Amino acid sequence: MTRVRWTTFLLGAWLAGSLAMATVATQNFSMVDRLLTSSPSAPFREFIGQVQAPHDREVLRYLSSELNRLYFQLWNEAQLVLGLLCFWLLSGDRRVSRARLVVVGMTAVVVVMTVWLAPAITDLGRVIDFVPRTPPPPELGRFGILHAAYSGLEIAKMIAGLALAVSLIRSDR
Image 1 (cartoon, one colour):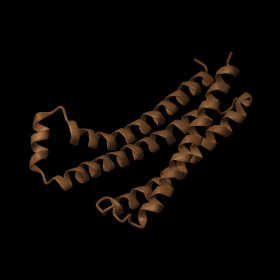
Image 2 (cartoon, helix red, strand yellow):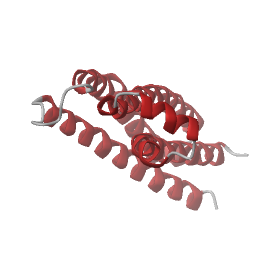
Image 3 (tube, helix red, strand yellow):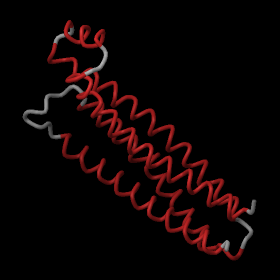
Image 4 (cartoon, one colour):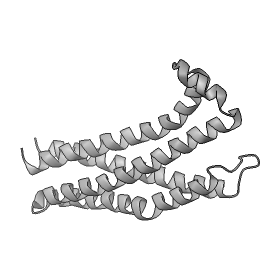
């Protein structure tokens, strides 16, 4: 397999991983409400019935938050490895100099998300985890802005990766 094909394969894995992470993150939170309203597990329903109702949702959402924080940290680290591997695979081939620039851009986005955005979101998220939402805490607005920035960068990175993968597939024919 050529280096371009390996890069295309890695880009596909990178994009698939990003889509999987988006799915996991959203489903972790919606699963809490699904479990609390209609869990198929009788022992779980019985246990939840014994827990103080106002706090069961908060505790389960906190668990989902912590899992998401861990998953995103690990995924961001894996993306850095994928970016470096893609760059290495494309190095030395003059035909794909633009491709290297796209990979550098994608990896730079991941660095920003890993070094600045994810830690800021994590820290702020932990501050507001058990804070009542009525009225909305002042930190919630900043959390929303950081989350939107992270999501926007993630979408931009994925669009760049998809465009690059298509370009590499076409150039390899």
